[in-house]
Length: 534
Ligand code: NOJ
Image (tube, rainbow, N blue to C red; front, side, top):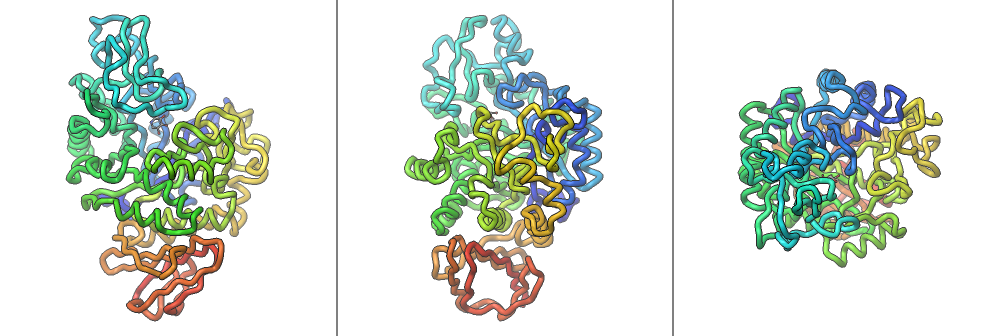
């Protein structure tokens, strides 16, 4: 990887983790920053380039830290500011970059700004939030947390008015029509960038501004502010990045890249469920369709692609019919559903089937975009449906088979997994020792991908193998060409290559040169990464 290039993010591999769930260094049952720092060698061994930390700011944790009560501190449960600085330093020493969540849209209702705002109409903080005497305004805005929130307005007794919130009622939205708010959040960005972080994953950006008669998403005024934030960051901190969380169609995400002057990166939300559709239907159709609908993005931008994250597997970006189908296939137990999604981890979703897990990861690592791996998925951790909300996919990292899974020396605050995914069955230590483990398979794929700029930033070209169960595409960058084959089917399948390819290719995953016949027989769920070198 070109670590020092300002475009480092284009071929980086990201790793998303929850400090709370990673490693507990002080025996209180909660993961912390010194703990994470101790585990950096592990992350280096895995071979990722950039860590994305879920929020670690002081918070009453009604939304696990996405409800921030103080933007300028670290939650004491996770350590001190000194611990944070040590962590950043240690990560950078190992060539690992770090991005953090920038939660722009809302604060916690426990934030002093909201406390002051609700206490008095005359407070300068009153106008930091969005108030109304009725709950009828902005009626065209959808409710996101459908399972819990009846309305985007909540009556505040103390304020004597309703306040606006797109997420939990405990997360009042900030008012981006107020210049003081806009300025304040630039200061927040400065604060953390000055600590040396490499950028932000900007949370929930479509919802910053509300306008009557619109759905209050993706408004031009919202883009104006985000461009201002980008210009501010470029000016003071070149090389740092902004990653956009906008759960929207590719057409609606495209403007978040601007002309290369808004976000550097954006999650490709709609691609994710279509990977699962393709795996289950054993055909490339849904994948091809969504990629065909994905507009080109500016040269200095990159998509971020993922299989799972800390939220429910969102089905917002599929049709009603597709959603019902996904629920039928992947959420047979009603407890698996949450809002418009599925609260399960990767391994259980794919029946803990090794071939499916590798196939899915191979798609993740070869389709266009920078991949994000969700902590624990590299060893095939499971989930806990007994925990509320999304907590079941945020359980402690399983380091070894000891009673506390090597996560802590005391009982973890969030329970460990049991059954098929218990630490005795799934843990880092065993997999590190076993060269045939999922961990090593994935690590090897990451190593190979790191050496191929075409897999990082190459263009995508589909070929027709005459068989819809086979995904056959090429990634091209400068002189480098890599041909990718995936057999999505549980049965052996033939791919017809036709002419135009060299007679011999180098298999990147085995590092062997092999002949390339015009017809290839692929074993069930087999995949090949072939360098076309002639
Ligand atoms: C998106 C985050 O990923 C999710 O975890 C959170 O609940 C909402 N934004 C609100 O901040």
